[in-house]
Image (cartoon, rainbow, N blue to C red; front, side, top):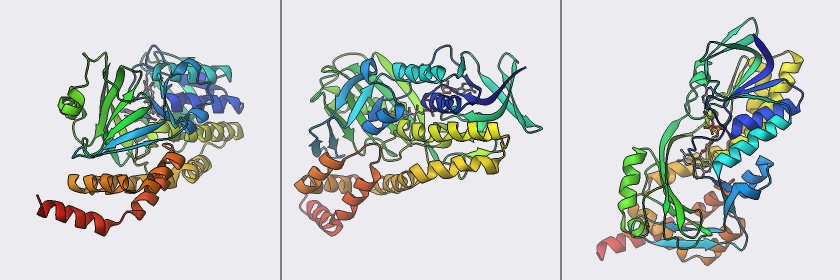
Length: 390
Ligand SMILES: Cc1cc2nc3c(=O)[nH]c(=O)nc-3n(C[C@H](O)[C@H](O)[C@H](O)COP(=O)(O)OP(=O)(O)OC[C@H]3O[C@@H](n4cnc5c(N)ncnc54)[C@H](O)[C@@H]3O)c2cc1C
């Protein structure tokens, strides 16, 4: 039977980064991926904030397709709010190349990658974990890091509780009449639970998708039929992406000999649906703590709780505030969302603040500030007048 200090399940961004940091801290690491190649299939829009790219520790080079400077936010009634910064605020990446580059970095630090290695079961006996693969081979590890993504079957079996909710995501990449290749489009109210998006990947192609509490594929079909989108579609889709988006981490992300990271731990921003930035931040902590604990010989949940404490100190507040903002936006009626967008459009100071300080990796502080500055009485009055005047 093969033996290692740390076994990482899943070679997505969180798994590769955890493997890199565990190997870099001196642990013997095996990274297990069920598929025959890293980075495939893609279940992502590939929009990364500046901080996410920095956290990846990768050179942008061939990974980045496009730089984004701003957004056009549409309300349900079609009101539009534009903001555009002078410099790039986000990058549109090729997720396949991004994931592979992260895995290569983990290998350079000394981790071993095994493809076509679906982990079926993990059992813990005598202070060690035994992983059973689909071909019945076994690997023994002192610590297992689940970076399995949204399904997180093994993390749940290890007693790491479910996330608060899972949204349904769907996206197509298609030829598209892009209005501004440096601006993403956000369509509020088009997808209950989050929003719909158009992310340019060039002058004439875009990723058009959404994440929602409802059935993502059904809602995407309806969204593609909306005038604003349908008239700009220039041909059939070249790629269809579907996937789940977990929101709201479980109460604990560790158990004896076991840790969960990335989507498996619900580390996703509830304001934007971005999981790569929080996943990478948490994965670095997970990898370092796992290596230290394995080398010390104390793999108890109590020892691994250092990871839980540290990632919550780094990200917990952002995710909690993000969840409150997500709930608030979801409780608003289409008319209220229209009013908010119109109201913000009349506040050039706020728009400048977004352009200057907008940060898709840590959006909640600015969003909370904006929402607190809204004059709710004026918004309600305007809505009443609008209704009254037809
Ligand atoms: C439609 C959609 C659009 C999105 N757009 C964005 C975006 O623009 N920006 C952003 O930051 N985030 C986005 N996200 C979220 C982002 O894709 C995830 O947060 C991110 O991929 C999570 O990384 P991860 O490493 O935790 O998991 P994953 O990337 O899901 O990787 C998990 C890996 O584990 C492997 N695996 C699972 N189980 C096993 C097993 N038992 N044995 C072996 N291998 C296993 C899988 O094959 C996979 O390779 C989007 C999500 C969706 C659904």
